Length: 322
Image 1 (spheres, rainbow, N blue to C red):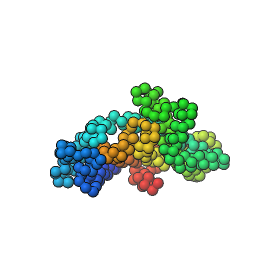
Image 2: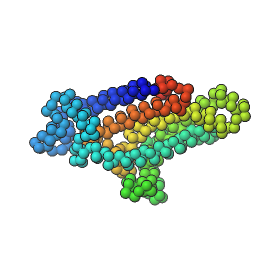
Image 3: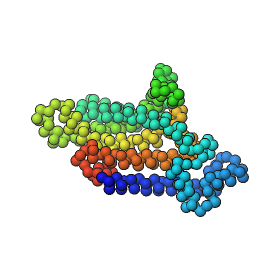
Image 4: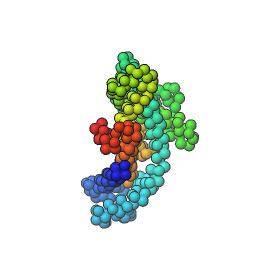
């Protein structure tokens, strides 16, 4: 266990190092002067050029610049936002709670409805199964921005049940739930359909196994068979997909937060890319990659606990194959 965790942590560090190097190199790989790239679209005075050159150590050799920047990142210093004239770390920290609330709310919806619909579809063949498959197929194929616009038109404009913009952070728990309900639904729809289909496939695979037939032949109650012998063994691929969804949700929030004018990390990323605010883009790129790698590590560690038949090595191979 210790050797496995140490190896995975080392791999995590290497991935983040490679990502940081690629992200940092983008400034120098872009055509033209790095200062011009960083200040694209903004007037460059001698004072501005001197400040940017000092901030990014552009007079130093490339690798010296990289290691100085990496040292600052490791201490939480991502530089200053060109657009907001604010420390990047503080800027992201102010907007991160809204995004975390949105992702958490969406994950609850995804797990409840995705797993629930998948179980119902697997246990109710026929019209119920076909209806779930059609519904999940539509939800999976619907872009988040399209579902967001429909939700705003119906539940905000026509019915007036929910606000169509803002995070509700100033109104406490109830305000957050009210403001983030429509964005969470829009964000969750595609992933709910995907999780429902994965759950259905995993359940059907387990339902056809010999030990399930033996349990049924011995008169074990249907609910107990499903709970102890089918759903428990089907959790492996379900948890794997849920883990990969977390990083996907972090990326997808950029679209949903823009549609609903929610001031979170996702909308910050869109504005930063649009306005060429490279320090913020650097920091958010590293954040997304770090979340993806850490979540994958957690999923690998959970697999043997969910299914004792798997070793840590087998769980990694199984996740990679899926």
